[in-house]
Amino acid sequence: ETGVTQTPRHLVMGMTNKKSLKCEQHLGHNAMYWYKQSAKKPLELMFVYSLEERVENNSVPSRFSPECPNSSHLFLHLHTLQPEDSALYLCASSRKRGGPGEAFFGQGTRLTVV
Amino acid sequence: QQQVKQSPQSLIVQKGGIPIINCAYENTAFDYFPWYQQFPGKGPALLIAIRPDVSEKKEGRFTISFNKSAKQFSLHIMDSQPGDSATYFCAASSGGSQGNLIFGKGTKLSVKP
Image (cartoon, rainbow over all chains, first blue to last red):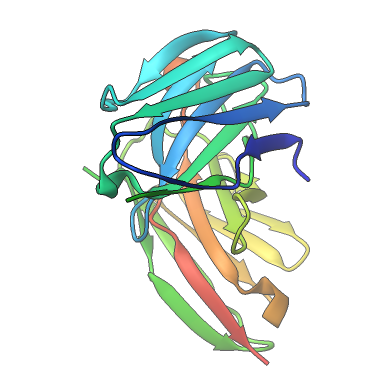
């Protein structure tokens, strides 16, 4: 248990569906991240939130929409996804953005787009 | 452009062997180099990390060797055990506003009994 909880653990959705991934951290961290993990690719940073403000968006398609209502919660809203979006989506948190520091990861949501 | 190159992609060793995983980086502004361990069905977890002011760091059976001039660092696992079978990721980051972790592609390690 890392203190970062992601739900759901598994999600199958059609290309026309709308769904949301949820992440919650109980570590008192003020930076949160979404990563995409695909087979045989590096972990891809998608979004960074620092103190609830989005500070980075790494050219992610608009069909992925993040939301950070407070420093403990992070959402990733999904709509009209493509099969190539199937991957493990990982949430992480750290004490601060910028500067070295340990990032704690959740267990991920395994997303399959059919 | 891949900023952190990791090799090999997969590695099989016998129990008690010393697997070595290598990473090379390009950005000289990187000043923090962690290794993450990921078991199936789990998120990555920090294993060990090093800063460029030291050439080696050891924690239990895990050792990072760091070569600043060559811009390379490696993970050694002494007396490897089947329970060490996992995917290992190296990463790098720099301080300040560009401090996000950049990950390598990962190495799948299998330790045979």
